[in-house]
Image (cartoon, rainbow, N blue to C red; front, side, top):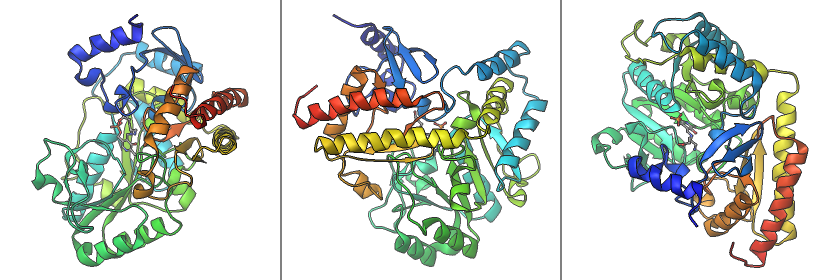
Length: 432
Ligand code: KE4
């Protein structure tokens, strides 16, 4: 019998490529039919068939307060009642800019945009305009959105320029992008020896969340900061995912690093289309209309999105917010690790603030090559066992997961009980 989700997915695929508006949602790497979500409330989402799940994706990070938080919804409703968009300055976007610059010491100025892709694309153009250089350095396994110069995979040699990782991206565009291994101090040093005075910017996920969660090695960011400073290259911390997710002061606060530019998204929009790039005033003043680096957007600083962002940023500053969120996330990852060990399943997990990584590898991976060794078949079986039991994890072995402030210890215990059953079935070799 065809289910409601299957019927919706079939319909969707007739008019939307792959039936989704973002590829990872199609469940291609885990198989099966994605649930079509009808509504969310707190830590839970409910699909078109009325099945409810504890949500550990949270829209890939934005829903740090949980779904449909009453204060955020009220802020959105109030803003919407006064009109959805004006294409003109509004007081609320000034308040949001002031709030971001207060909460992130590295931000002296900020420009609001509508997606993380726009934020990183704009920051890269700004760094190139500011330095007059073309070369961009990024790291293998880090994702910064889908602008052309970032859709690049490592060249044949370690220090050769990138090749397109997507069709439709001219080789001429990505030849200015150098892809280095994440957490490889020697490769980083060599790159600056060879190209230092031509490097416009280095963009990095300060804690990687798009090759699953990979932490930087102890000195990685200090080395990066020293080398970019020494060679006049702009250091861009892409905190679209880590911003206000891993702690009150984001990843840059955790590491005590002051990047030249930072990008934010997800949490700062509270689930609405809102992102930002910002940093040192002398760099940001290159942005039009002040300077010669063009950047624009019809819906930038949209009043409804700004209302959601301001409300979210107010609520996550409440005393004890991150201590509790970190404890809940660690309760999940510690419990999963203990359960897998009891059942002899090769598995590891770690948490950083409100985000986590689950790995079907015996040890926590430290870089792209190690995380690629994960047992993706075991992950898929675990994923589907948990989904069937009502626990919604990221449908890919190479994505980070997220806990919200709406989750409770009892919710986490419920998930851990289901996981124990799933690990037992994995060990017994039961297909699910
Ligand atoms: P968006 O354009 O999707 O708003 O942001 C791009 C982006 C930039 N930088 C970082 C560090 C990011 O994680 C992202 C987007 N993250 C993915 C999650 N892997 C979004 C999910 C999706 O593509 O559907």
